[in-house]
Amino acid sequence: MLASSGGTIETFMRNEVIPGFEKETGIKVTYAVGTALSNYARVIATRRRPEIDLFWANDLAHLAGKQQGLYLKLDPALIPNLKEVYSVARDSDGIGVMCSVSGCGLQYNPQKFAEAGLAPPTSWLDLWDPKLKGRVVIYSIGVLFSQDFLAMMTHVFGGNEKDVGPAIRKIRELRESGNIVAFANSPAEMDNIMVQGQAWISVNAQTRAIALMQGGSPLKYVQPKEGGSLFSIVLDVVKGCQNPIAAQKFINYLLSVGVQNETAEKIGYAPVNAQAKVPAEFASIMPSSEANLRTFVQLDRATMNRDLENWTELWNREIETRR
Image (spheres, rainbow, N blue to C red):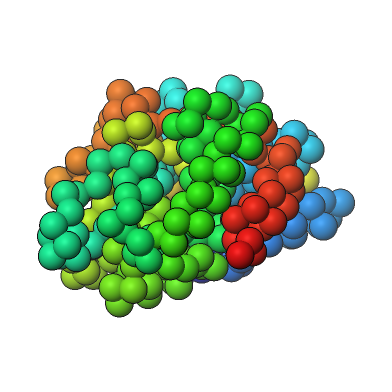
């Protein structure tokens, strides 16, 4: 059983990836839909008798589960494509492996910017521009991309993830300035707010921006000059699962050049196989090499995971519910 996301990822996996794997190996894949958080909760709840073989995890779920001993160390003999993967994508302890990466930066409406006489954004600080009053949308703190935004702001304003106070105060100023028109509770809500023109600029994932651009949306995406945060999809085999060998064979398939290329082309996640390529039209915004990957900011996920409850309380008290 593979536990992964719904939406475009589910459609891609069911229609493009799983049939090819099943045909090549004869191994049948059961797809369980959930968020990274709900799937992680399921891994924990069933740890004595695991239901999930392979978990499509995000950075936080990978790190938290690894710390709790929930995942197996991978067998390179079952995953020969590991040798083609960027070193930065490999877990230092051999537990799990990144299969795709993306960034978090600024998505904006170039038409609205031009009509208002505004230059395209280049910096995170552009969100505080008084000319963008009532035109900024960010996610609620329950969405990973706002957690990344808060962490990035600790770097921009001279701190780090261990002290989010200065960043909280600056984002509170952004709210009090009237620039923020809405807090989106999901990527679908964010897409709707931006496409309808209710907001002109947002903090969003590169993958979401690419999906809209591929669908004909005029919205564009930029990595701020201070850097964009890097987040990844990590494949973790659940310790004690029923099908560890089959799960690792599926990992090998997902890391193959063909599937890596298709993943970048169809759903906008950049490859980690050094032999794979990103679509030419998105090469300027998508991590396209190991050297380019290192230009993104690697956040302190351990601290983020440890302090998320406190971050959430601070955010809700000082920013989102503050009037």
